[in-house]
Structure formats: structure tokens, C-alpha cells
Figure 1: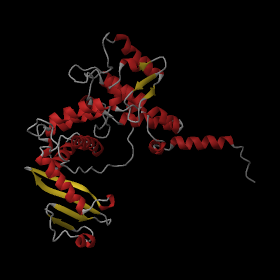
Figure 2 (figure 1 turned 60 degrees about the vertical axis):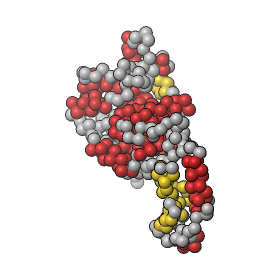
Figure 3 (figure 1 turned 45 degrees about the vertical axis):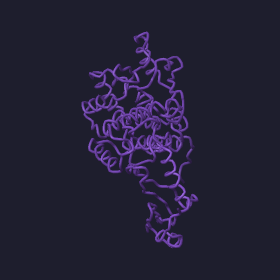
Figure 4 (figure 1 turned 90 degrees about the vertical axis):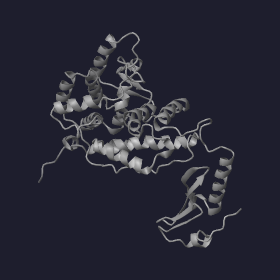
Length: 381
């Protein structure tokens, strides 16, 4: 039987003012500030609450299409196809879904799987635990953000974790684990302030402290970081077979911008050769860990913060990514052209490297002094 509308009529929809909402029969129409219209549904189907955005007028969505969408959901319910895994009586827990998410991504050839797994294991799973995936709410996500901020996590770091959560929920819908994405995840504002980097004296001090630290991995981690500008997980996932000390490169198969060869200094080549010479015959990773499912170290944060504090610096200001900023900034200040810096840093675009050209204008003034010296100045009359 066709639904009869008294409030959600076509005339009322057409005449709706910005930010006005009209709701009837579980259909919600909202006229947005930009003039576009958005349709949502909030209905019960076979004992399950379905609350989702169906689409916008600009995408061709109409009230009739929303009605057809609801009718299809009810038809699926009658046939026992509520988009849940076959044979499963209850919704997947967050922990179970996270483990299956990583496994399916590996089969599909997903990107940045190691990073996603790390963010899940270190933070997301520990917080959401056995919470049913379909029962996550916006309130749960806001609590997560609050907890991470209280742990002094940067907004950018939290946003990367939220991106993994969002991707997992979208995939859960695609894989028919849940009927719809239950959360509207809002990212935190990120600061675009001055890039922090270490001076040569600070680098020496940190390296000396790291060499004496109880954690055997933090010393090579820091040395590699300041000598290459490699990202955290690019360093921790180095395979011994990917280190070529003769060519002075490290192959990175899962780099952010795609597989690449990372150039290294002669000092680092000699440094890494010493590790290769004493490696166990069956050793795979440069940073092996028997306690990790991946076989390599996932987190080095505690040791890194300890080193920074012992070196007399602020762990809130000097974070692991500071090593990358440091290497790139010193390359720019040494007068290396930006395309070459991009080749070394692995940035996707030259624009991303240009941020570093504003750090400490001494190298710019030095360049202008060299230009002046090339000109044969005539004496003033």
C-alpha cells in the first residue's frame, strides 16, 4: 500500500527553507544551507533500527526513491537477508570485526594495511573491545576522541585513527557485515603551524641518549629516521632483504605514495651493514619482535618519549615524526633542490615539500649572497 503524506509533500519539500527539516513515515528531508536537499531514513525493520543517509537531491534522490529503498529493505527482511553474515545470530564485536577487516584487506590487496593494523591494535580495539559493531554510536566516537586527547595525542594522530575506523565501518557495509554505517565520524581540526625540527646539536644529544637506552630498537630507529626522513612504519617494517648497502638504498614496498627505493647515506649504509653482519640466519625484520603478530616491532613510542625526555627536550613537542621533519628541513637548508628532496622524502607532490622551504631563512640568504658574488658590481659614481 502506497504511503500517504501530509507533511512530506512535494510542495513542502520544494518550498523548504535552509536548515528546515520535514519528517514523516520514517523519512527525514533536510534543506541544507547550500540549497541542496538531503534524505535520511530512521525506521525499524525486522526488529533492527536502520538510521542512514540515503542521498541528496543533487544526486538524483527523490522521495519516491527513498520509499522504494524502504520497501526493498522490508523485502530483504522478509527473505531473511538483513545484510548480516550467514549463520550469524549476533552482530560482530568490534574486536572480531577488526581482525576480520585486516584479514580481508590483505586478501583484497588493500593499502597501508600495517598502519591500519597498528592503529587498531594500539588504540581502537583497546577502547571499543567487545562493543557490537552495529551498535557503535556518535557518542562512542566522541568518547574515544576525548580519551585520546587526554592521553596527549595530537589531533592529526587521532584523525588518522578515525580514518581507519571510518574505512572499517564502510567496508563492513560493503561486505554485508552490518546493514548501515552507524556513525557520522567528525574529524578534529589540525594545526598548520610551524614545522618542528631538531638542530644538529639536539640530534647528537638524542642519538647519544638512545644508544645507552634499555630498548635496543630505539637507537637504530632514531639514526635511520634522521638520516633518511623515512616514516615510522616504513622504518619498523624494514626487511633485511630490502637493505642494499652497496647501492645505498632501502626498498620500501608499502610506502605511502607507492613502492620506492629510499636513498641512504654512506654512514647509514655502514651502520646497517653492522646489523646485517650479526643477524640470525632466519631473521626477517630489522626490528624483530616475538610478541607481535606481524613479527616486527609495532610501537616504539614509550622508548622514544623516554629518550627525548632524558635528552632534556619536551616529548610533547618532539615526537617520532619530528625525525622526518628534521631530515627534510636540513636537506632544504643545505641547498638541495626541492625535486631531489621530494625524491628522498617520498612525498607525493612537490607542493608538500615546499612547506619546508620556509624553515630558517639562512639558506635563502646564503643563496642570494652567492648570486650577488657572481655579478661584477660597478663602483657607484
